[in-house]
Image (cartoon, rainbow, N blue to C red):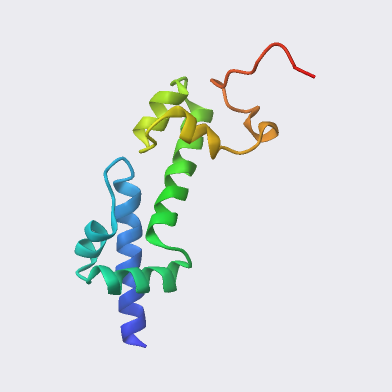
Length: 116
């Protein structure tokens, strides 16, 4: 029981670390080092406690933060994409939600002409 609490505390600290460093190059080795676990053990523990891999968690957190930024700032999509670790605007916009959700975003270009 104490070991489970200790593991959960370590992962909770790691989640805070991830949130504070979303603009950094986060990888399994870095996170394992932060938790003082081997990469193999860290991966297993993280997945068991969080329910997804560290890479998936980081990707979703970055996307979530980027979406907040899209809605609340006047920055260009490319600036936001690069700031959150996406290599180009195309890869970023491909994973954005569908159009009905995106109507809240200030800086998305919508074509004037519909092709039927």
